Image 1 (cartoon, rainbow over the protein chains, first blue to last red):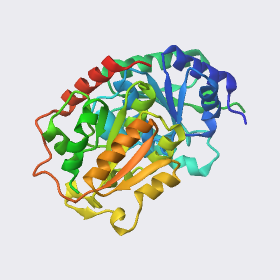
Image 2: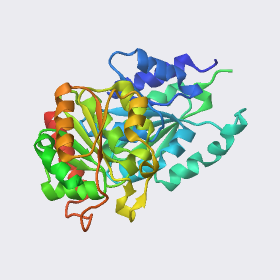
Image 3: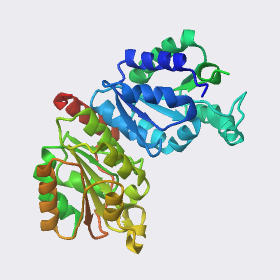
Image 4: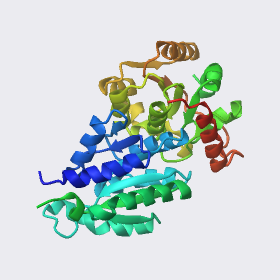
Amino acid sequence: MPVSVANSKIVYGALKECGVEIMSALPETWLVHLIRMADEDPEMTLVRLAKEEEGVGISAGAHFAGVKSAMLMQNHGFLAAINGIVSFAHLYKIPLLMLISYRGTHGERDPWQTQGGNVTEPVLRALGIPYTFLDSPGSAARRIRQAQTLAESSLQPVALLLMRDLMWEE
Amino acid sequence: MLRLDCLRTIYPELEKSIVISIMGAVAAELQSLGHRENFFYLQHAMGLASSTGLGLALAVPNQEIIVLDGDGSLLMNLGTLSTMARYAPKNLLHIVFDNESLLSVGGFPTATGTGADLEGIARASGIRRAQTVRSCEEFAAAVRQALAANELATIIAKVEATGPAKYVTDLALLENRFQFARYVRSVARR
């Protein structure tokens, strides 16, 4: 599977540098190495979810306790989590660090991913969620740190879109 | 059995724990018995009280976490039972007040009134200690036994579909949220 191990390591390492101790996740092709790294890391609590919206609750609980967390999901999972994001994270000012694999954009071969690709950014904008792209190994770690800093200072969800150029090697 | 009486019988246990309550009648009734800084009322995001309890249980293993859930909320997030069972934190007690009704929005019947069995679903999701109770005495005993057993438990309390006259209290959502987080951080020891 041509998911980049080297770039997954950069992303995972940056999350650790930020002090992330709890990670919630639902498997997605691009996320396989990140989830495995979390699973094999004795310092990380990995919470495998049935549905992404649960991750909003997990991260809220962790935040109440002063523990930093991150959410790993696909963009369709982000769409499935919207009520939790609005009615919990926004309503109660909960920081969320959301790493969202951005499927269904240029280069996508799976027809079933393409509608979600079309609406991901418009929905992020409609929700007022600050977001940026993780598209190159050189800037990924810095952008993760900046997103984490913004989430904690603004007490709101912040999104990082994991791009094909970073996650996929062909 | 009235939910308010159930809450009254376990109030001493709630005082000593970190408590997450769902919205509506449960939140209003708990506040009517006396708000405390260790009580958080999730006034929306139906289904996520149990997920929040799980996050807290994993983040604060030295504290008992009690979730006050409802049938309508749990039915919106049944997957939470399988996630809780997967990690089975010993310090998490999941109480579900099942009035077979979406009471706060006008009393529409839920599927627990037509045969959905939350204890059975919890058990089949992997929660070994799952129990249904129908009287206040049974409820209080089940809660105390679950706390003493020191394992993940889901207790389904069959209660009447009645609630307080109004649901809005004078506690602002964010006031509750920041007060609660300050309390949790003061007692957290990983």
